[in-house]
Image (cartoon, rainbow, N blue to C red; front, side):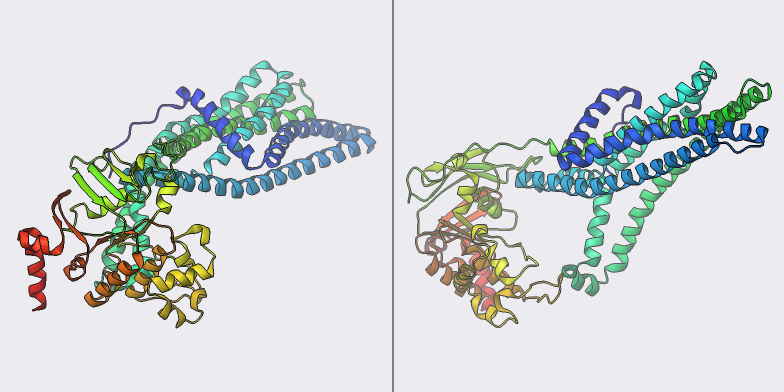
Length: 606
């Protein structure tokens, strides 16, 4: 479990932040639907005034009935007050129904809006941030419940207003009986509020504390249920172990919840009992006053109703205030995520100072956030248009990191990368990435149509069937696509109806075709995209790429030296540094690390 966060501050120290987040939540709800927000406010006002009105009319109804009994005559007053009370009760029911409708409509729209805000924010984050475990903890906290909390906070705010109006109107009626009755009314609702306030911070602390465990449970659900894990889960009989881990995490979380729930429940019962005693003490006070002749039967009925409904309104108001505090605690997770700083990219250049100059890497070093070790250390390279470069080295030597920096996925820290004579820092991000076609080893397998899987390489031509076809021919995918049931309109993957699964090699050709969607790309990066192919097929694909590349710079990462040797230039990487560089012949003559690795691999084929 992650380190325990600090205990949240008490509710009484949070009035100002509470008001701040209340305004922000209200602004968010207003932006989602102004007319629903106005309707909610109006209905809240109506619902707040009606209870006291019903109690007051009830008093006149009872007194008119008593008078009718005494006179043995059913008067028009009885029918008037009875009809009026019936109308007010119907209005109360209608206002509550309308409030529920508004809340349900707002909940759906606001939940969608907040989720979109979260996803948009995630897309603004740098790749290095997205790869950070702490980021996913913050994302998990932001998405869990936070999408409903803004509306909840607004609903509770309106609830406090509604109950506040009711309390004021009830207090006005009680004041005529005794000013002390108002104090009893308010004091009777305090115990339940204190019980809830005591545990709100602890509940939120558990929520924050268990983010890694929650994320692990979600991951285990994915592993146990998704088709791309099924083969290994079944083959290695992982299901019992993973399911037990899932159960263990739940048991741990449930144990914490149970302890808090039991304590919270008993405190609520004990303090609620105090409120009940206060209520029935008030009832006794009213009954004694009635017996003494100071109150009519109608007044007694009204005051008893006012005490009962008034205490409920006080308790509901204070509980809503406590709920607002709890919502505020949860909303801090949402707004902390939305307000995470994003380093602004100031580059505006869409064309280099010296078109055709190629790619230059000068003293490039890079360190991942939170790491003490350099992932890249003093890299220097110069690649002219039409040049092919192969990167080789052990896993973790920095090959993929280098290509991600070239592609603009990480921001430069130390050193520089220049495209056509202009630093990547000065390039507009979109303009730069439009000039680069990349296929990573872990390329995406979209559960889309074949054509859309290819079209993803150029979003502006996403629906262009002619572009799909041209790119598929270049990526060597057209032949097998034509054999699919619906060709380029075939649904891929198993998530949707009539989905068709491809072999690993076919998926890789789809990814290769995706890279060719960018016809104006100056750089093509292939990060082991043909790992699922045999050595002969990979060599043929690389030869094809070299032929199709033309005046582009081609960068290949591969562990197969039969393919690597075809590159114009080969760079050997080790612990973030380029230790050897040259042609195949030059590196073999050097008799260094490359020659050793080449001979080891060649020996396996002899």
